[in-house]
Every structure is written in C-alpha cells, then in structure tokens.
Image 1: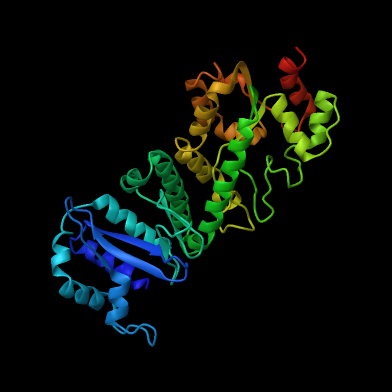
Image 2 (image 1 turned 90 degrees about the vertical axis):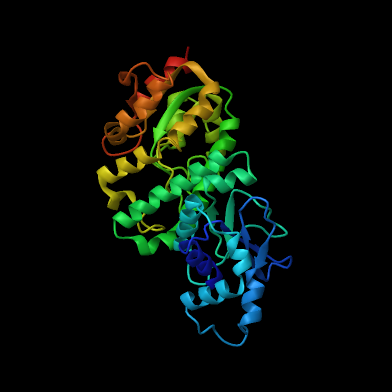
Length: 368
C-alpha cells in the first residue's frame, strides 16, 4: 500500500503537481484507504487508488513485482482523463509531500482522518507520528494555520541538525519521541501558565530532560532535581513545602514562571543527537533558529500577565553567557527589561541553586 504514495511522488515529478493524496482509515480502523484528487478548481474528480491497486494486483497473495517506475506508467496509461486535471504547478505541496515520505519508515502509512480522528492541521501515521501539513494545506482545515507552520518549522530545523551531524538515519526513530515530548511539555506549560495570576519573576532555563519518566519542573508526577529543589524555595521564602505539587503551586502563587529556550527534549538516552554532542556553536544555532517559533512566541503569550517590574534571571551562568545576547534581544524588544545588566543568574560553583542570589531576587517583591 505504501507504494501508492511513491506513485504520487513520481506523478508530481512528471508535472502532475495538482494531484493531491488523501489517505484515511476505514470505520473499523483495520483498513487503509488512499485517494488521489485534483486541486484544480471546478474539478470534482478523484480515484480511490488503494482499490485500484488491489483490483489490478492480487496483493493478498503476493508482492507486486513491478517497480515503482513501471507501476507509475501503468497508472498513467489507465487514468489519462483524471491526470489531465492534475497538470500544473504546486511546488509547496510537492516539496511537503516529498519531505513527508522521507520521514516514513518502511510500510508505515499516514492517514488524514478516520471515524475517530477528523481532518486537522496534521496527519497521523500507523507508528504514531504527526506529519504537519504545509502552510497552504493547513489553511483549508484550521484558522490556526500559523501554529501548524511553527510546528512544521521546528521539526524541519531539528531534522537539518541530524543531517549535518551524520545522524540522518536515526531521525525517523527519534521523531516520535521529539514530537510527543514537545506536545506534552507545551500542554503542561500552557496549563500551568493559566494558574499564574501575575508574573513577577521569569527564570530562563534550557530544555527539560523529559525522557521515559517525563522529567519536567511542571510535571507533578516526577521528582524535583538539582535544577530546583523544594528546599531551595523553602529557605528563601521561610515556609514549609509539602511535595512537588505544593512546590509548583507555591511558584505560581508568587508569580515565578520558568521558560525554556529550546523546544527539543534531547538527551543521551532517548535521542541520538543531544546537547553534549551538538557543542556550543550548534546549540546556539538551534536556539537562534527556533527563536521566532518558540521562545518569542512564549513571550507574546505571557505579556498580558507581566507585572510592571518583572525580574528576569537565568538558572545557569553558562546559559546566560552563551545565550544572553539572543534572549536579551527579545526581552528588550518586548520591554520586559530595559538593560541586559538587569538579567542575573542563580547558579553556584559545584551545582545547585545559589540561595543567596535567589533570595535577593525574590525579596525585591515578596518581602515588600
């Protein structure tokens, strides 16, 4: 069945760029269907190519012996009238479709919808991936096509770093983890943001380790770490904090928000590419490349909740040294700070949080 998708790719290469592919699942979820349709205006003409393939070849008994080039020629010969409606240029769709095929594993099948999954700004696959549509296609299904474009760009950026570092063959396997971690972390962060009435402090962090245990500062089901222990906050605020859930509530109540600078939960166990193997130069390139779609977008989301004199500080001194110019530019442009000198850090030699530094920052508002 996956051969159908590559027939479409071959047809695009022959000039039939108005041909679009619509894969779906049957109501039972057991059978995969795929139609070719023409995007040409005033045309209501499509072909259920999965039926055509099954009727032409007895795929239940043996594999198709023709190669993809021969299969494409057979399809052209038998569907000339339909294909005349598909002639034309649509380079954005063709490039998106080509990129989508590169992500698929052998025999992995995408679907745009099923009885339990309606058309949206991405396709799903039989292996659980999300394949974000092109900007052009997303407009047809959602008013929020900008979000789709941003997600697609974020995915495209990390793919380029896998390729540049010689890890291209691992990208398909890592993609599911990168997508699901990105979605889950984003949803947890947004849900927590709703619980903060006024933002008094912004801590700039890197990216969650996440992994199989879903380690994240805002995930109440995981333990706290050296990144930020509850004892750090207890000592600074001179209060007792019961557990991590109570820790998160306390951060929210004083208006402390943590923002990551990278959308990728890369780590040494779950992804072939990680921040250690990337090196400082490429790490900075990642943050710079994703800035418009990730960090800057978060800043726009929080602006209405900012207090008049929000304190901004980095969790780690090394992150401040490496990224202050990039992050600071966004903060200055949005008038969250008026000088880079206003951005501090709370790190200390040997690891952990410098409680004296944190107390100095917190006390400016908390004890006033």
